[in-house]
Image 1 (cartoon, rainbow, N blue to C red):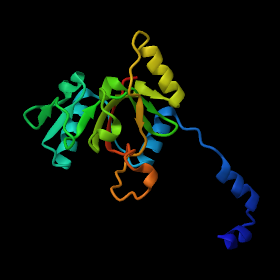
Image 2: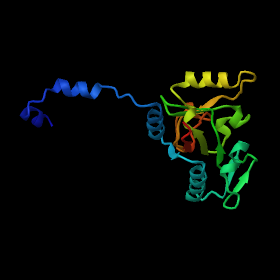
Image 3: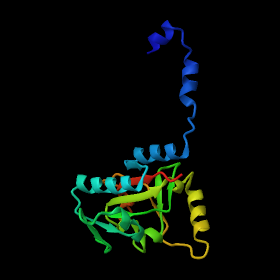
Image 4: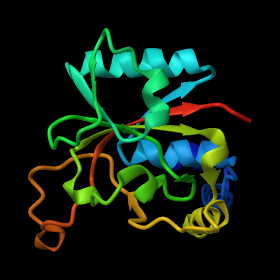
Length: 194
């Protein structure tokens, strides 16, 4: 590479400056980039029918015959003929739920007791399917927490937490993570609503 730079007289200083330039991504592009880089699986949907179809495909792909719904509003996306829908929490059944916000600057997904009830993320199954809309995208955790405060002025939810890693590592030997893992095998069904 240096040979070509010398041959074509390309200044090395300019090359390093080009590499240091920051790229400003839109909020949705920044979130998707960070989310996928952490191991999340992302499906973009334009219509509710696509959400239903993608949900079915996720379940078929993973040979999951049952899904736990933690949000009654998601019943419309499930076809009870093709898979069993349960409202009872089971540690081995994948969870299909909503979220509070999608945090763009780090690719995290923010939840509260409105989605998780009183169950800690570490006690949840490792397989998650999250339904969200593009209007739930926020720049950072501060905006996400402010959004929760604004949306629930009368009664703030509890159990506010975020999934920060989307690759489940069963061989994680780091003793600092013992019993404190919120890593999930996560699929995100993102519906365009703006």
